[in-house]
Amino acid sequence: QKEVEQNSGPLSVPEGAIASLNCTYSDRGSQSFFWYRQYSGKSPELIMFIYSNGDKEDGRFTAQLNKASQYVSLLIRDSQPSDSATYLCAVIKPGGSYIPTFGRGTSLIVHP
Amino acid sequence: DTGVSQDPRHKITKRGQNVTFRCDPISEHNRLYWYRQTLGQGPEFLTYFQNEAQLEKSRLLSDRFSAERPKGSFSTLEIQRTEQGDSAMYLCASSSSGGPNTGELFFGEGSRLTVL
Image (cartoon, rainbow over all chains, first blue to last red; front, side, top):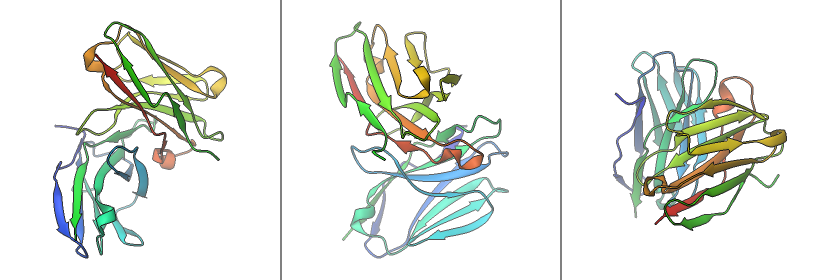
């Protein structure tokens, strides 16, 4: 089992719809969870982070964390073609070194 | 703040040659990471520094790979005797230290290596 798992996609949604991206992690003691966006040919950039169970909203983005089920999700409301990118989930495991472990990413395509 | 810069952006080399990449982190960040990314995969951790100390290295980092961060400023990643399997994007990132938000990484644009 991989430490951080994501469906590679692509996930295709129409413009204006809600895109739901999911990530599961294997280490129950993981502490912090991050979503990065990576456009084709570019480097990852941080969108959101979440530490506590529940929802965290930032503009059109909502991160959801469920530690009991070991999953974290990212919802993108009113999806735009400019949201088309790969979304990477990153997790910090327990142990003190605070090194993010990344999933393989989910490719999102928002079509007009 | 000019962000994280990496040099060169692209490197094409022949198998068996040595290559070196440089990373200049955001000046106030004391943590510096090297990751490797291949097509369709997420970034894979290679090594990280806190100030000038290299505190952790991945098992992926064979003895052909070496990284330094003299004086806790810029860092170099050297690959000796390159192999075709080393072809990848090498990403450098930096962050400030201090608790769980240390995972907020700021990435450079990457150095793409092609080994022929």
